Length: 194
View 1: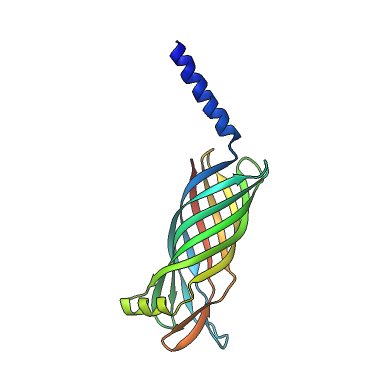
View 2: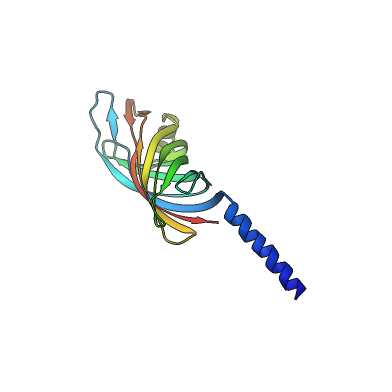
């Protein structure tokens, strides 16, 4: 009986510590539809087709109050797009760091918005040569903003809809033509808190 009471007190103490804890960690997985919006230096847009990519990562949340909390995620992200002008599909592999201020609207709905920094790890095109040329001539950073709702499915899991808009022009000198593009995407993400 004494052992049972000791275990009960320890577990109750852990629950109280969890309630007082103002941070948590989460795993996330998602998918997004991205487009690169290529253009030449004379402002003529090149035709592109959006592509579907995936993302996996971990993150942390810090509670500021009952209404506001901050999140910072560390994500490995694949963005895909097709450049019709060069008839080539490109895969862009990024390390992505989205940060957000989150507003709790009610028990089910939050709104998140904030900056996102991405650093390209590598790329590949239809063949190895195209991928290598694209990698070596591509600017390696992407800066943007993201926003969207978060819907809580349970106390530990949620889904988020996210719109991302790149703010900087990403330059590329490919096959003798200098062009720039900006990334825009819509995504769906599942998150599990632990």
